[in-house]
Image (cartoon, rainbow, N blue to C red; front, side, top):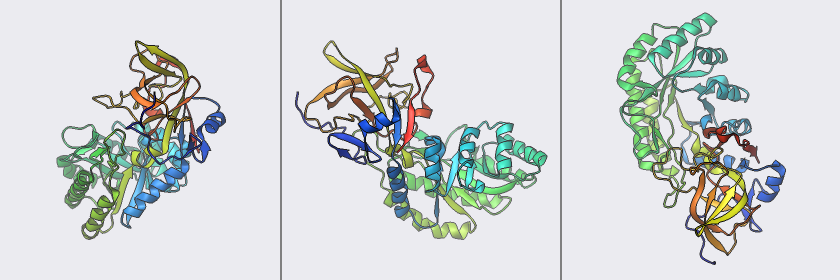
Length: 411
């Protein structure tokens, strides 16, 4: 049947030529041949660069941008991002090794996450990176390990603030949390730190993620600065690092609009004089992951069967939730919503139909698109899931049902 373009049409960042999506200047069909297999994730180098440029154009001078590697730790992506940003933030010893392979100075790499083992702390201390302390116990362990190694650990206190990032997809602060030290406990922790062989750097205050409301992010940033200034009164030294987190979201679903970065930049510019006066040695850091890489990546799988069940069309592909858990709706969605999905080699087809795209796994959870309108497709065509540059492959249960892993490529 012939109808209008889908309401949930793919983002415009990628070019379309001769009915085919292009990634990094290559037609998707050619890229698939180059990769040699489906499914795969593809990340566009030019789009990554453009996103960081756009961010810097809208943020005031003096703001340092760090890339949160947990969003996409592919080594090639990290190597590229390291040339664009001012620092890297890691959440495991595995990510730390990837970060240390870049040209990023160790002092511009930070390590966050609860439950760091003694082995991880020792590696971080020996490397000279900044450890974001998540508890009083972790502080004592870092001091003990540093003393045994003969190195003075660089540390910052990750604070669980007494507020949250409103309207965020994932709340990382406010209320009881496994992340960081409750704000009201930090003064006592700082007084104890003064007695330990630790090199105090500052604070890491992260209150939430995946937020599309500039006003909410602005409010959280202002509260984070206020909290840091207040806590600095009990610090064992000058605050040299103030990481106020990120929380910048990207649109995934119909009705969502891109975040207005310009408003955030304007308000940060207004705050800088106050920050400089109260914390004259502080380097102000914004830590971003999804916002930097999410829209620059796609997931590609191939249709292996087309079937109709009681009037509903199913496109069965060689990819699924084991590669892209988030797109299946099983990674934080309360009510399942479709990611933007398209037939990558039939982007401008006039004949559209309503279909469900499913994977090869023997579970009804393996659903990549539920009753979406897209170009009519058949066996051999390529299904593309957009907004897949963050929390895709590494956030998915790759071993589930023992199907082959997805490839990754930076173009």
